Length: 191
Image (cartoon, rainbow, N blue to C red; front, side, top):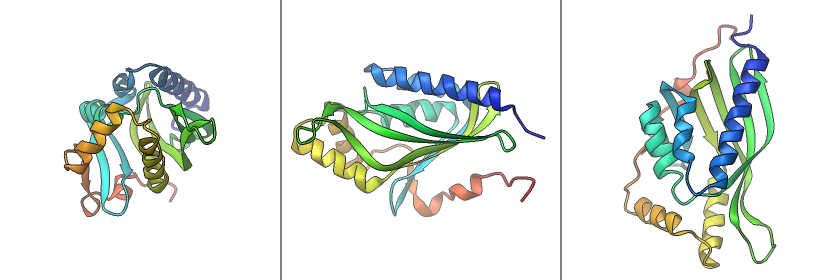
């Protein structure tokens, strides 16, 4: 028996994608995305061979995931290109493209973090996520930001964010060995 209906999960994802699109169109708005999470939700992603980003609960998700981590990414677009919904497990996997508002003068197209980007969500019902794991190509992200910096297209917010990261002032970043994201998965009943 399914945990949720496909229709309920799809409707929630549609609201999420629309809120995400709206936040990317404005210079503010990412911080309101925390309302899509349960009070005790977990949101994480990898930052290469040494670090993980981990936000626990709505407050850290608001302040860190959609605050300090989205600083400098105002007006970036996250175009959702594929979606997989599993009502049996209550999980959704999406693949997205991450594009800057500025254009690369060499291509005439928006700067983009190429490679595979996506999110894996666990739906908790009542229009809330309880768990999210993102992935993206860190090497391509660094390459994109270096290219933007060389072309003087890096926003002040991203420059400030990079300065904070260089100084180690990055809330939510933990040593890789201190966070095992696989351990945060609930084992499905059928495994």
